[in-house]
Length: 213
Image (cartoon, rainbow, N blue to C red):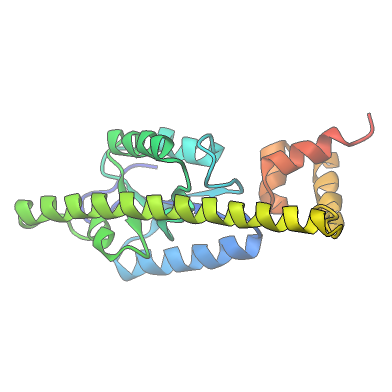
């Protein structure tokens, strides 16, 4: 698909739905509405079922490979893009910057200029871009801190449950396992199965490896 002119931007959306297809649908609707409100349409969508704390997410890497200078990377929030440690986030941000991608997040109003008409006062545009870059960094740091705190609370809860003899481990989602087995048996690959089942590729691999030879 060819790039459009200045007014019609090439918008790529990145959706990271770590729990269910319903989450992805809700986010997709919000992103499509936002693009429409700004006179744009979404050209490409990348849906991931992976943790934001992982750097090697296949769909994110594919997006970066496909991207061209001036494209818009549209996301629901910064934590959908990253819950990475500081060093990994800086590497990801550098990769995004090197491709000339403009990050636009629904929950970050200063970023919305990235999907608007870029003509106008150059100084004001550069100032807004600098402020937005700083805020993106800040929100990525907050997202990482939130991730670490939740992990710490989970670990404390598990430790307490073990001490009290209440911990039974994470229950197996039998419906999910059945769905994954059916998709694999039907001949779908790991990534396609994960996408259709609404789970991570890691989960698919674990279920696949447990299948009888």
